[in-house]
Amino acid sequence: MNIAISGASGFIGTYLSAFLMESGHQIFPLGRQMFSGKGNEELVRTLSQCDAVVNLAGAPINKRWTSAYKEELYNSRIPVTGQIVQAMKNLSRKPQLFISTSAVGYYPSTGCHNEDSNMTGEGFLSHLCRKWEQAAMMCPPDVRLVITRFGIVLSRHGGALRPMLLPTQMKATCVIAPGCQPFPWISITDLCRALLYIIETPQLHGTINMVAPQIVTQREFTQCMSKHYHTWFTLTIPSFIFRLLYGEAASFLTSGQKVVPQRLVEAGFEFTHPDIETFWSL
Image 1 (cartoon, rainbow, N blue to C red):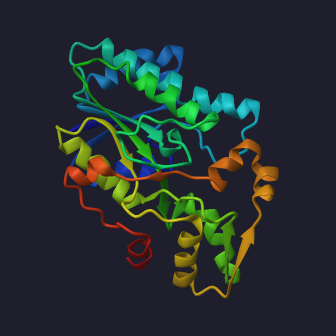
Image 2 (image 1 turned 90 degrees about the vertical axis):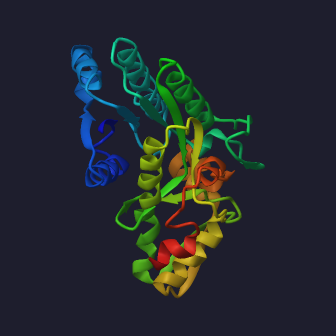
């Protein structure tokens, strides 16, 4: 299968591209130049050769959300998604599948949410996710649409976990106060496997939560990490420090969402890392 990927050079895109190629698929990276005014024809031409499109484009959210960076977060997602959708509309032979990324930050920080939840959170991240998903929903009706809401993607080789591992070099771990906030996560292995499962399962469509089945708190996650690395002590970092460092973006760290992957489980997908213990043990 020919699969186009926006954001193919990013952390997740690099893993996913390698995984899909190992599975026998051909990857067509959608580079940034394709989303400029002059590159639109190249985008249409590339998509005309593809059976599926995976939209991973977007600037990282784990930076301070200044007004300028909020604009970058918006512009790296919504217009890019809109251009992909418009390019598909211009094709006589369209891709069969469009997978567009979102995040579990769509949901409120209260309650427990599966894909049938119609509740949305407040604040910038939830608003960003709603706009992002609305842009994807404009795709042609004859293209199977899947919106994947990612939890925190974990890999021991980089990504979100890298700064969390730094204190372990000094035999310490850090809990982000209050510590009881949910920590919705998925391993990079299961993320790639789940995306391939979606590609290969035509009956899957609509919203799909990309999180492990186990719900853990930030403190429970840290305790398991501490056990794995045999650290000597755990520090609790007050939330106001993260607010000083990250401003509004601190909410990404100091609050979280309880989210379950109901549709993946019901579809028969089996997680390699269903709980945080298996993530650290394998």
